Image 1 (tube, rainbow, N blue to C red):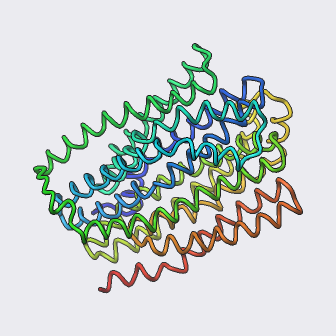
Image 2 (image 1 turned 90 degrees about the horizontal axis):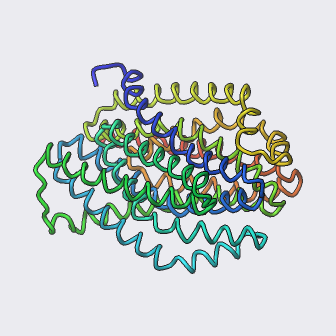
Image 3 (image 1 turned 90 degrees about the vertical axis):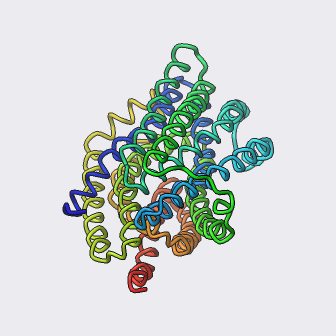
Length: 437
């Protein structure tokens, strides 16, 4: 921590940046593969199914975020045994969640088909994707735990490698399955399933080897299942769960609103929102790296370090958001034309591309606040801020869509990003108070 905080944030963020870049590229490649099959139903089905699974799996984002806060705090206290216990507790939880999702898959599928207004062809393709992708739950949720652990230990190269391998393998397999074996929508689902299974197995083995290297692994069932610790993890994870499920619901709501206007709008919005996600994952590199340092500073009670990280992380994040917005202004047309060869979808996407340019800078502030509050394990505040933001977002979106159609959807999304930042700024003093205790 002797280096300047900007240098240190960049050191931790750069590997996360490249790994995070690969994550939305999976969605972009999948969208491009389906968008060039000359049938709108492939693109619509992939968009809705991928958004649904984003909501399902991101709802369990507390597995990563909760792990970061607890591990970084234990790391600041040099409590390596507790770090091992946190990992094992969360892996048991992953097993329980994965089995529950697989058992309830028919219920989830039927419910999702009732929510969205889909044509018969699109519904059938949606079912094909769903019935394959649901089995990727154990692998994808395990990767959440592994990345959270290594971000908390400030070993972002390792967490980034896990995410990067998963994403790149996913892209390669999807391209092979779709272009060589003509599996179409099944191909992109199998690509995700296989890459999640392979990546999680490789990095589980590496994780236990790494922990055994820095501290002898001693599995004590009593400590592992200690009521106080389990309750603490439950409280932290429950708050993040509520916050994350509301966040993912907001993006599913975004897709739902488009489906009420027409399938062409689903497809056009899918292209643009995937590019928005690309910018979000790039900006999240700063949030992810900040999480570990914030938790560490609290463990050490180093308020000077915290203030420095707070200031400089916002500077880096907002400047990067502005750069992304400028880049999208220059190249957005070329990217859209690469992602689909359907003329009507190209034109419709271009009509709403201004929002692709506006959102990266606006959203940079709420992403960075997320990282700070996750690192501090101030999960109650995260939950309350999200409840407030989503509640207003739903009301505003219904009003604006009624008057401005698809433009209203995009205006509402921008307002949602601003509300998230303002509501978390309101709670910032609560983190300051923890340094005085």
